[in-house]
Length: 84
Image: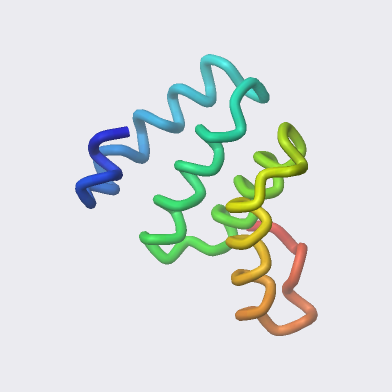
């Protein structure tokens, strides 16, 4: 997604969200890309949810696992896995 690649996260976000809406559960990279945008925008709850969705599709996605680990490490234990 060109918008996200050049740092235009607010423009890329609705495009990726629409792509997921049109074909949910099909491609983990779309969930991962939207998760990275949400992370850049400071929306960690949404980021965590999207990363978990990406891992449901592709449980071997190392990037999603790495980002999820970073989020979990940055949150107090009672908030880990609580979603948005």
